[in-house]
Length: 118
Image 1 (spheres, rainbow, N blue to C red):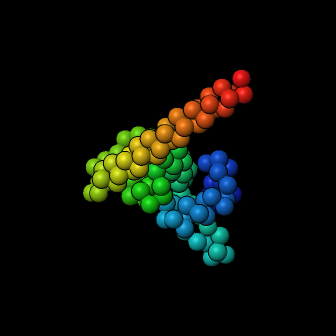
Image 2 (cartoon, rainbow, N blue to C red):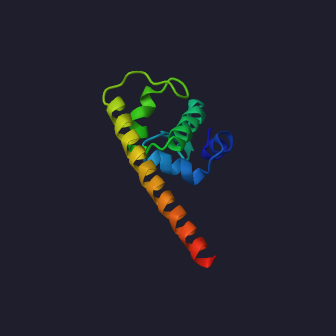
Image 3 (cartoon, rainbow, N blue to C red):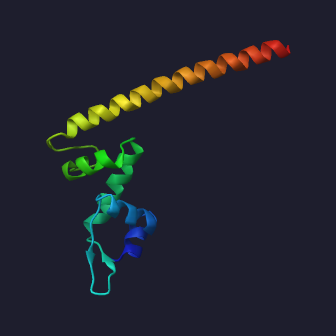
């Protein structure tokens, strides 16, 4: 299928598909006229990429994880993947802690401002 059809079937823009290809997340064959041609399984691959991105994984880890996917949340054992996932979980945990600190500070600032106005 051509990039336009893949875009419609996967629900993403053609520009995003080109980006995924540059990041080596999906692959195409080139026709004689230079048009990209994708296989039918690419639709599901794009859906998996979107799900992994939504889970907070960067494309460098998705590139490692993607060959190990066998379903939406199931991974086959692949060398180095588990370490990458744990590393990303640590990153997300640190971000969550930083956000919680910022939320507490903002709540205190709001309360102090409201008390000063009263």
